[in-house]
Image 1: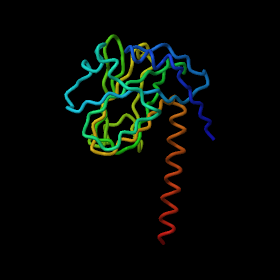
Image 2 (image 1 turned 60 degrees about the vertical axis):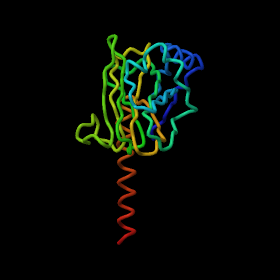
Image 3 (image 1 turned 120 degrees about the vertical axis):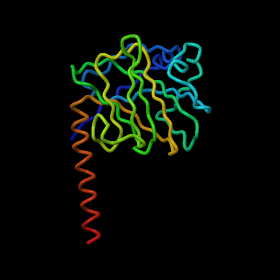
Length: 196
């Protein structure tokens, strides 16, 4: 059985996010799992881009969420900002897992080399284009991102927004996917047997 260890962020991390920067968070060396504290910016016009939301004068427009994001149905473009801890598990990428799988368009902006790298997923994008063939969204996080700067996630969807975001080491994520697949395989098999 996989044991999960959540690394909780101190209040200073939220204060750091309000300033548009991230303090260095030292995770438990055994932690395989991490849930980032998040702050939300709503864009009712859907016209803001990364440069707009990452601007220093926009930092205080982000409102801390109480746990994971629950925004219901909205036509607003939503921007999440959060900080990630440094990678202490070697050269393999970590995996940012995002649920539910019915979100139309997600753009993840990871800070690197003074700029940002972008990854896009969503149920309006081809499944074959995903970095990991998994029922939820999973995006690789390289071990050399700039953890002193926040990560941004843009959300555009017509589905209800009730999100869960977590970060996994590669080894722990592989185990999670195997267990997850086995569970849903058994569940599907049970449904088929009940239908016979």
